[in-house]
Length: 446
Image (tube, rainbow, N blue to C red; front, top):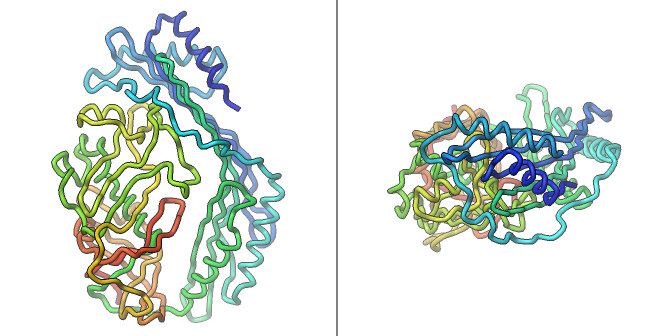
């Protein structure tokens, strides 16, 4: 267990010896065990311990130097402070990062978030059982080429020369199953699913098996569809993937760097349908990997991003908040440069819709389950996307898997074309989201 009091003492003593008056240190340590199997035998079993510490030092000219280390004893901390101090003389001279004004504000106490790790042999046994069950679910399922069962305990800390000391630890377990099915005269079909929980005891392995089995079987009977404009329903996973791909619209640092679909003037304007609301909520109960403070020591919180279609807020570090004349939001990551990132999206309905929709009654609707190739098919600066996907065409509740299709469009136009946000939300590893209905998206089929 990391001892932040001891680390703070190391840093204070070394800083006095080196004549350093301002510094901060952020670090994390991860213990992880993971198993992968193939046809009833262990394929890969590994255990790792990873640690990373970022040290920042400000010199007498208020220039900043940054270094990293993995050594957390007294000598390691002293050497890192000395190195960062030397580097500060070559630091930037504009928009220099400062301590967060909230680095000493109390953080939420979530209690003990750790779990006792099980032997790695237990991971192997449970994963072999899961693979066996999935292979026996249908004659067409020929393998589970990608799979994994892991458990992890992570610890994080932040401290600075103004007396800030923060520390937290949490554990979680995760399972991933990706099946492959083959039938004579047909293309191979695949489906994947992931579940995450606080510990292996509470991990929904059965639910993961059920979902990947149902999806795989439903993909076996597939058909081509004609190219055209369709009413599209995004699954929670698919919509959150798209939201993440274009997250620069919420990112204050991206806006300042002119690497965003938004500008400072965009805040307060309508960017989506009034039916949509989005927040970033690091402390949401569904966020197993939630954090109570960011890399600058700022407490995390619920941040309103889109309210009834209006862009109402941005994700900030201490530096971007100062330039926007606002408060940091707890979304900073420190390194050679301070960056900004989201924690856990929560998507929900804004204004009431004039009409509600149900898949059981819909005709000729495309249900997108999972978007593919997000790394290649998204132009986040232009707002365009063209992405292959897994999904179905739905007619009054009957679903037929679609073959070799892509969805394309403009992201901002998509947001404004939302016609319904379903009331029931699903908790996923990326966030909480209901199914989202969008009118008139371009689908390329045969």
